Picture 1 (cartoon, rainbow, N blue to C red):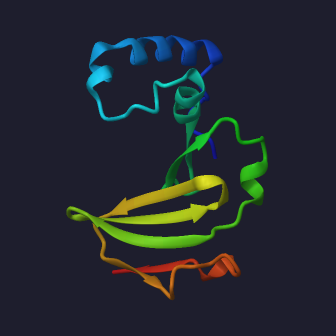
Picture 2: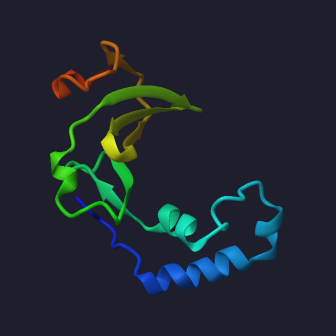
Length: 126
């Protein structure tokens, strides 16, 4: 479910002018974001979503048609370490990635590919 609102076009234009006109952006290694308003909009026109239980979060494009998320099935699941935390990542089509961070030790059951069978996206944690 969506927990944050999408930015308005006015907000995006305002933040584009502020963010991309900042002199220090000229010295950053990220040249693509401010190369055009379209690039900036693609990166920043997102809203925070959460799973029903609130454990997984994702920033999803506000350009995704309403209701499209309901029809997406998980494609893969992966586990990685970030310092002392374990990061669970559920990948969906359209480049959507829901993540959950926990202190538990987790591992993927199977190979992590669940395109053919969404029920195969399983992780066990202790």
